[in-house]
Length: 276
Image (cartoon, rainbow, N blue to C red; front, side, top):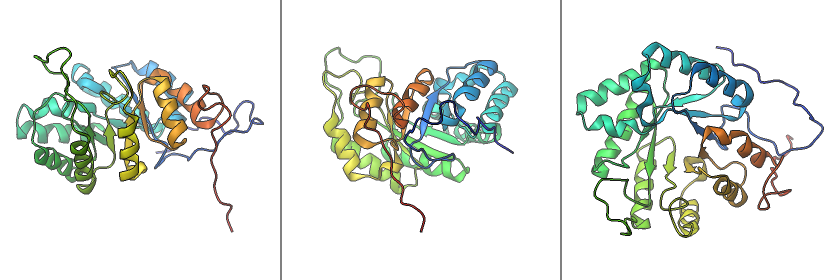
């Protein structure tokens, strides 16, 4: 299937910007949320910014509330623009229904055209070894497993206000290592407890993760412009990020150096060796 071209000549093309990999990208991946937007809204988004979107995540099982053919139509539209679609974290809800429903879910995801399956346990109590089995099972279905790891336990009923639910970073590092060894496509680092709902950002944890693991295998949730600006400033334009769809162009102006806040203004650059 031929992909839509977003235009060969950009407006004001005489203004230099930092170069970006063309899709399908291996680094500098941007994932955005789709809370059940309509087809026309999605088409508008893809026409205006599809070149800068790598993955469209449908979170919280919103597709369970929409017509099957309609979901397939939206996924097919994304494919025309070279955008992969992710099931989001709904698998952790499906696991509660038992193994047969997990297999049926993966069959359906593959049939509809999803290519990425998030394996998260934000609200699920599941042994790590079982989560690893899910990562392996997703691969067996020919899909890309993207496990999520977090610094805090998921939002659950009965949590005591003010009580610290932070997970030991070493445990988190071990999780990441196990997922990568199991063949995870990317590992998503949840923002909760790191840059979200904390008195101070845990940049120490981010730096330790970046020092221990290949950055191209990691993806960071950055739901706030100041957060994704910090990631670009500290790790460059090729850091893999997960943001809200309303922020896609703001992030891309930061990645390319077209615009930016004080952290990145006039500083973003890339370098590629000339061909011999």
